[in-house]
Length: 315
Image (cartoon, rainbow, N blue to C red; front, side, top):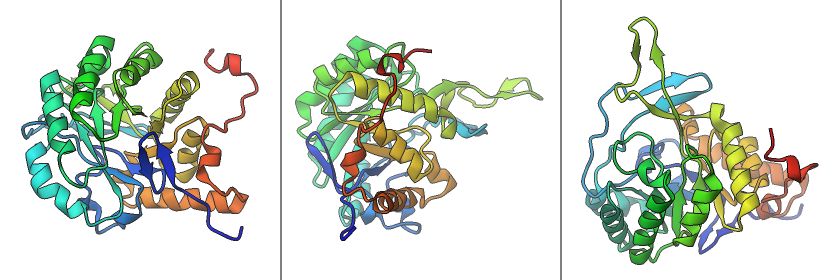
């Protein structure tokens, strides 16, 4: 090839210079990773979930390793939206990357208020609405598992949010396509999926659950096949921009999500294993395209060849 492949992607109203975004909850507020990578190379940074008031999160222990992954019940600890806008956001404006605010609330009104505050902050590229956290008693999946809860939360945020609106879906539902349709019908521009799967870990010697919260969210490579399946399902059923995530450790993992229809990907648990994982995945995507003579990353989006489309979702 005479020129480098194009990596820019367009997700509805959101344009990214490449399809690699760091996932919320795994990358802090971005600047913590400055010793390890150039933030300006990333397509986007999705910051730690933000609530109206600061939160301490759940008591420890709140993480543990699982086979091929991890289990966490952090409980959405964060500095609060006002502290983020005042002190965490300004340093990020120095980098040529899309800053995405992941937000949540315990009520519809709280979702809307957090969205209103971040939407008015200079330098925000998009808002990701978390209706899928498995680790809090109120909010999170209470909205994302229920079509009416999804509709109310998304519609309330849509009214006050002029920025591109991403809605992050939980895999812990009977039919993710039904929830995805409600989210889009209520105002979502883009969907991101999937958040973690519900799980527990048992301490055999102490005969107790490992996490103080009991239940946590399973992430990492163990969930990749399930995450791919759900992204494939939504992309096959709907014409909506999708950001795929779930167990992406390598460029090949990321490319698989693009093939099943995701227009971009988020890197999560891999950041704990290697803080430079997202940049290595970005470089790997570019190398894959260059070696195969593919001029544009968008040529791979949804390019999966299926031998039996009618059997794709059968077991």
